[in-house]
Image (cartoon, rainbow, N blue to C red; front, side, top):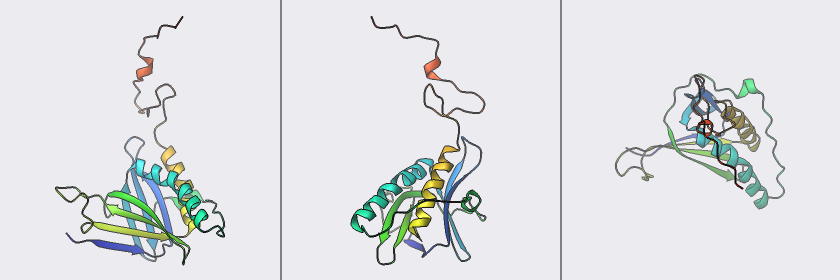
Length: 182
Protein backbone atom coordinates (compact mmCIF):
# COMPACT_ATOMS: atom_id res chain seq x y z
CA UNK A 1 0.00 0.00 0.00
CA UNK A 2 1.35 3.44 -0.91
CA UNK A 3 1.43 6.53 1.26
CA UNK A 4 -1.72 8.65 0.90
CA UNK A 5 -1.66 12.28 2.06
CA UNK A 6 -4.72 14.41 2.77
CA UNK A 7 -4.17 18.11 3.45
CA UNK A 8 -6.92 20.39 4.69
CA UNK A 9 -5.06 23.65 4.28
CA UNK A 10 -6.44 25.58 6.07
CA UNK A 11 -9.48 24.05 7.74
CA UNK A 12 -12.70 26.01 8.03
CA UNK A 13 -13.44 24.11 11.24
CA UNK A 14 -11.66 21.61 13.46
CA UNK A 15 -12.95 19.77 16.52
CA UNK A 16 -12.77 16.68 18.66
CA UNK A 17 -15.73 14.87 20.14
CA UNK A 18 -17.00 11.55 21.46
CA UNK A 19 -20.06 9.60 20.42
CA UNK A 20 -21.75 6.87 22.45
CA UNK A 21 -22.46 6.13 26.09
CA UNK A 22 -19.77 6.68 28.73
CA UNK A 23 -17.64 3.57 28.97
CA UNK A 24 -18.12 2.73 25.31
CA UNK A 25 -17.59 6.09 23.62
CA UNK A 26 -15.70 6.48 20.38
CA UNK A 27 -13.49 9.56 20.13
CA UNK A 28 -12.98 11.52 16.92
CA UNK A 29 -11.00 14.37 15.48
CA UNK A 30 -12.75 16.08 12.58
CA UNK A 31 -11.70 18.79 10.18
CA UNK A 32 -13.70 20.53 7.46
CA UNK A 33 -12.58 22.56 4.48
CA UNK A 34 -15.28 23.69 2.09
CA UNK A 35 -17.34 20.54 1.35
CA UNK A 36 -14.60 18.10 2.41
CA UNK A 37 -15.06 16.60 5.87
CA UNK A 38 -12.39 14.31 7.33
CA UNK A 39 -13.23 12.36 10.48
CA UNK A 40 -10.69 10.10 12.19
CA UNK A 41 -11.00 7.79 15.20
CA UNK A 42 -8.66 8.56 18.09
CA UNK A 43 -8.21 7.01 21.51
CA UNK A 44 -9.23 8.92 24.64
CA UNK A 45 -5.59 8.94 25.77
CA UNK A 46 -4.61 10.54 22.43
CA UNK A 47 -7.24 13.23 22.99
CA UNK A 48 -5.95 13.83 26.51
CA UNK A 49 -2.32 13.93 25.36
CA UNK A 50 -3.18 16.36 22.57
CA UNK A 51 -5.13 18.72 24.82
CA UNK A 52 -2.44 18.61 27.51
CA UNK A 53 0.35 19.09 24.95
CA UNK A 54 -1.11 22.12 23.18
CA UNK A 55 -0.29 24.64 25.95
CA UNK A 56 3.32 23.39 25.98
CA UNK A 57 3.37 23.61 22.18
CA UNK A 58 2.15 27.23 22.36
CA UNK A 59 4.79 28.03 24.97
CA UNK A 60 7.50 26.67 22.67
CA UNK A 61 6.14 28.78 19.78
CA UNK A 62 6.18 31.87 22.04
CA UNK A 63 9.80 31.17 23.03
CA UNK A 64 10.82 30.98 19.37
CA UNK A 65 8.62 33.86 18.24
CA UNK A 66 8.22 36.22 21.23
CA UNK A 67 6.28 38.85 19.26
CA UNK A 68 3.31 36.52 18.72
CA UNK A 69 0.30 37.23 20.95
CA UNK A 70 -0.90 34.57 23.39
CA UNK A 71 -3.99 32.62 22.32
CA UNK A 72 -7.21 32.19 24.27
CA UNK A 73 -9.33 29.14 23.61
CA UNK A 74 -12.90 30.42 23.68
CA UNK A 75 -15.55 28.21 22.11
CA UNK A 76 -19.29 27.77 21.83
CA UNK A 77 -20.27 24.18 22.60
CA UNK A 78 -22.84 23.87 19.83
CA UNK A 79 -20.18 24.87 17.29
CA UNK A 80 -17.62 22.37 18.60
CA UNK A 81 -19.73 19.22 18.41
CA UNK A 82 -18.83 16.78 15.66
CA UNK A 83 -20.88 17.24 12.49
CA UNK A 84 -22.22 14.63 10.08
CA UNK A 85 -21.00 12.84 8.13
CA UNK A 86 -19.07 10.88 10.73
CA UNK A 87 -17.56 8.31 8.41
CA UNK A 88 -14.02 7.84 9.78
CA UNK A 89 -11.25 7.34 7.24
CA UNK A 90 -9.08 5.41 9.71
CA UNK A 91 -7.95 4.94 13.31
CA UNK A 92 -5.07 7.22 14.25
CA UNK A 93 -1.80 5.65 15.36
CA UNK A 94 0.20 8.85 15.94
CA UNK A 95 -0.70 12.50 16.40
CA UNK A 96 1.78 15.33 16.07
CA UNK A 97 1.89 19.12 15.99
CA UNK A 98 3.83 21.46 13.70
CA UNK A 99 4.00 25.21 13.17
CA UNK A 100 4.50 27.28 10.01
CA UNK A 101 5.76 30.68 11.16
CA UNK A 102 5.51 32.26 7.70
CA UNK A 103 1.74 31.66 7.59
CA UNK A 104 1.19 31.61 11.38
CA UNK A 105 -0.65 28.30 11.06
CA UNK A 106 -0.39 25.17 13.16
CA UNK A 107 -0.83 21.65 11.88
CA UNK A 108 -2.23 18.57 13.54
CA UNK A 109 -0.64 15.61 11.80
CA UNK A 110 -2.53 12.32 12.09
CA UNK A 111 -0.92 9.11 10.86
CA UNK A 112 -2.98 5.99 10.28
CA UNK A 113 -2.50 3.11 12.70
CA UNK A 114 -0.65 0.35 10.84
CA UNK A 115 -1.35 -3.21 11.89
CA UNK A 116 0.53 -6.15 10.48
CA UNK A 117 3.97 -7.61 10.12
CA UNK A 118 6.68 -5.09 9.39
CA UNK A 119 4.26 -2.23 8.69
CA UNK A 120 4.26 -0.56 12.13
CA UNK A 121 7.04 1.92 11.38
CA UNK A 122 6.86 1.99 7.59
CA UNK A 123 6.50 5.66 6.66
CA UNK A 124 5.83 4.77 3.02
CA UNK A 125 2.47 3.12 3.77
CA UNK A 126 -0.88 4.20 5.15
CA UNK A 127 -2.51 7.59 5.26
CA UNK A 128 -1.46 10.90 6.75
CA UNK A 129 -3.94 13.71 7.33
CA UNK A 130 -2.74 17.24 7.98
CA UNK A 131 -5.24 19.62 9.54
CA UNK A 132 -3.83 23.16 9.11
CA UNK A 133 -5.53 25.62 11.44
CA UNK A 134 -5.05 28.94 13.21
CA UNK A 135 -3.65 29.12 16.71
CA UNK A 136 -7.07 30.39 17.84
CA UNK A 137 -8.75 27.28 16.40
CA UNK A 138 -6.17 25.02 18.08
CA UNK A 139 -6.58 26.79 21.45
CA UNK A 140 -10.37 26.32 21.25
CA UNK A 141 -9.90 22.65 20.32
CA UNK A 142 -7.66 22.17 23.38
CA UNK A 143 -10.20 23.66 25.78
CA UNK A 144 -13.09 21.77 24.19
CA UNK A 145 -11.06 18.53 24.27
CA UNK A 146 -10.79 18.78 28.05
CA UNK A 147 -14.60 19.07 28.29
CA UNK A 148 -15.09 16.05 25.99
CA UNK A 149 -12.64 13.87 27.93
CA UNK A 150 -14.20 14.76 31.29
CA UNK A 151 -17.74 13.86 30.18
CA UNK A 152 -17.11 10.15 30.57
CA UNK A 153 -17.78 7.85 33.47
CA UNK A 154 -17.44 9.39 36.93
CA UNK A 155 -14.21 8.63 38.78
CA UNK A 156 -14.40 6.73 42.08
CA UNK A 157 -13.07 8.98 44.85
CA UNK A 158 -11.62 5.94 46.64
CA UNK A 159 -9.66 4.11 43.91
CA UNK A 160 -9.56 6.76 41.15
CA UNK A 161 -10.93 4.27 38.58
CA UNK A 162 -13.92 4.91 36.25
CA UNK A 163 -17.26 3.79 37.70
CA UNK A 164 -19.64 1.79 35.51
CA UNK A 165 -23.32 2.86 35.42
CA UNK A 166 -24.43 -0.61 36.56
CA UNK A 167 -22.15 -0.60 39.61
CA UNK A 168 -18.54 -0.40 40.66
CA UNK A 169 -16.28 -2.85 42.46
CA UNK A 170 -13.86 -0.69 44.37
CA UNK A 171 -10.71 -2.47 45.49
CA UNK A 172 -10.28 0.11 48.26
CA UNK A 173 -13.63 -0.96 49.77
CA UNK A 174 -12.85 -4.65 50.17
CA UNK A 175 -13.90 -4.81 53.82
CA UNK A 176 -10.40 -4.97 55.26
CA UNK A 177 -9.02 -2.20 57.38
CA UNK A 178 -5.31 -1.58 57.60
CA UNK A 179 -3.89 -1.83 61.09
CA UNK A 180 -2.85 1.51 62.52
CA UNK A 181 0.86 1.97 63.11
CA UNK A 182 1.92 2.50 66.67
